Image (cartoon, rainbow, N blue to C red; front, side, top):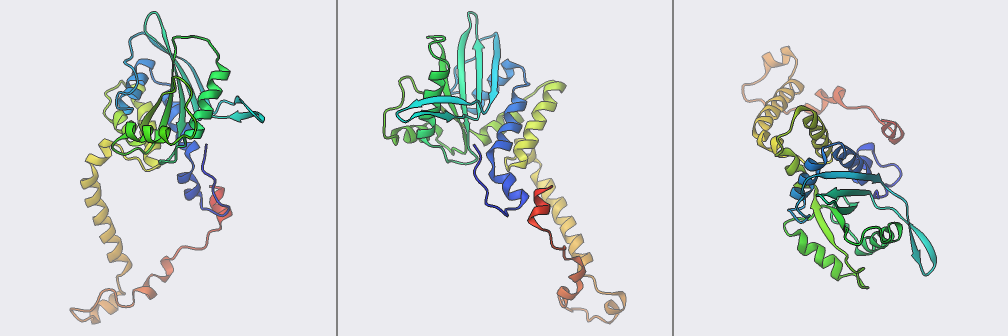
Length: 271
């Protein structure tokens, strides 16, 4: 679920702090990929914590923000994971349910995991005793995701439900897994869309990182050209200028016409 934004935040601040746009942009497009390819991506992005996918593989269900009900001592409460994905893998099929909870950073909470796990059990009771249920915790995990997962579960005040299993997926690992793919034209367009969405949220892909030196040189050249033009004095002043005159002298007066006009937060929110 999204982090709450304070009234008056700019459009960009709201965009970059809300996880729902990132979740929707990434997982809605992942669901369009061939299920075999999708499972391979998820395994790679989870550092192979998910089981090996034996063909055939089918994605039988994909729900975004499903409304599940959880029974508590005070009655019932609504529980809403970010994504629910159900796979049938192999022949005979082995069912694997992924309960996906996304965070932009490391703000995962074992209590939320517990609620989502229990709500899933109430929503899909005893359907298949051999099914696997995995809580896929997406966020920024760093170098040792399994250790972080274990730490969060250990910090939980009560015992986790029997059979509980959480697997970490880092946005950066997902980005790298997608950038390494060799796929056909159809899937390439989908993958490129996902990489663009991840890039907008600050997750640069491997291909872009390779090109950074070239982009940096081009940026520095354009930056210098802009600075030269903006600080250029009138021609008659240049003729009278001493050879070592400070080029920044009087810069404030020369760029006053370049200042941007005021923009209200309401205007930004309508973008």
